[in-house]
Image (cartoon, rainbow, N blue to C red; front, top):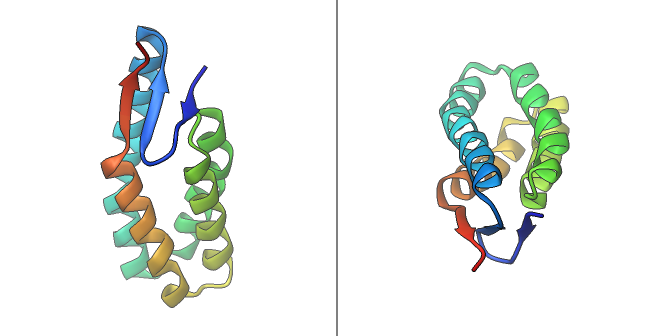
Length: 105
């Protein structure tokens, strides 16, 4: 089972889970730049869609913080509020680039 143990550490028990989480995070990291480009282009639908997907996948991958960020992205993109989107976009970027996958001993 994966548990977010506070901070940005995700605890894992086995190799398969570790590989799955690393792939998930690699994909989320690549989307960081896509989100920034979408905001610059005013592509609120892209941001809304990604936020919606994060709401579902964040919890499924043991990252409730991504679920929270995704909900805010989806909400503010629905309102087409570029100003309000700046904070959750920064949080998303900080989270996906600083989260650590740690093997439980």
